[in-house]
Image (cartoon, rainbow, N blue to C red; front, side):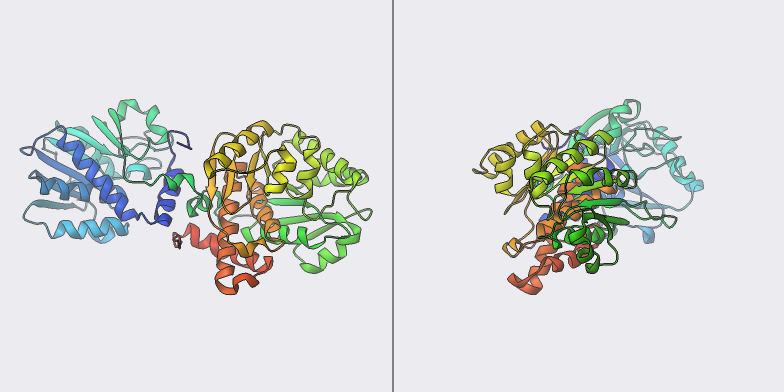
Length: 507
């Protein structure tokens, strides 16, 4: 298992999104969940038993609808109580299963409760709590509160679906009334807060629901969802990150521009580009959005380190390397800046020439850095050739990520991302992206997430997926004639499609 045993609400949503991307729909997951609930009943009670399933209007209620259908098919006496009006069912998958139940009038009794005054004592051998699940935040509304009281007041055996209604899934807190279950059947993996809520969960059982292992092994739209930061109406400039890029030289002026534009495409608020004055005017001409800081001289050197230090107080993350060059003074200056940035605890991304400069010292970093080598740069960095199976490459990257105290994003046909503990792979991207500059865009995308406060591992996984998917979108229009700017232009659409659940894997 590549993630911690328990998952929080956002992580579980991301896993479901990645499952959909692979081709396992939420409807399939709901079917498996409901069938699992039915099995939990049949293991304990025979078909002579009465079962009441108390369902809400969301996905948790949909799990209950599926369970009711399965139990009716097995000969159980089944009653479904819907708390609310069926017209307000807000989950498409739940509505599909509700409509099936409405056509089962001979074997399933359905009762809608529209007001808390209509809630009556529950009498059944088994009470299934399928009201809310992971969606609780704060105290329950009046009707849900009264229904929870009715469930707790029942003598029947109580099974909660995923999370007892009234418990906050991530914290285990009950902000008032919460179901006190005899058994909690939690799906896929335990939810984070359940270990703190033993007085409510009863026996805790984990129920597999058919999530493919690849949903957690490979990057997907769920990882973009985890890294994405929602903008509230009262947001201000700087709330979504200020990024400093140190790069460019008299020879290479385009690379830091692509990094900066990649960061802006993600939604970072401000991008500073600190570059030698020989490249500054060229870079400023590419985009007025890039705040250009002119460094004295024709290449980055130790005399620029002091000039850059005040900028570190204004930014949330630093990306070093694109187009920097490897002159002797530049190597020394890069390592000096890395030491300073690490000392301040700022997130850091090292790419291209900065990786080669860092390789000379190879000091252990503090866990907030991303290194983005391709195979040749990985050899310079570690002295090791990248070869073997995907699993073997994953083990190699994981080993060196642990040694270096950083997240390594090894670029390749299949990207490998590891922080030394967790390891993920990314399949997006295509051979058209061998064109120079797409790696600079990747650095910008990943560094943008760093500047927004996303952890290094999560930022690298999301960056790899988004950059590759943007490249795939550009390739679908231009084939092998794509430019890195085409990739930049596709990044916003990829992010919106990912978090909106509109992406499916093509192959």
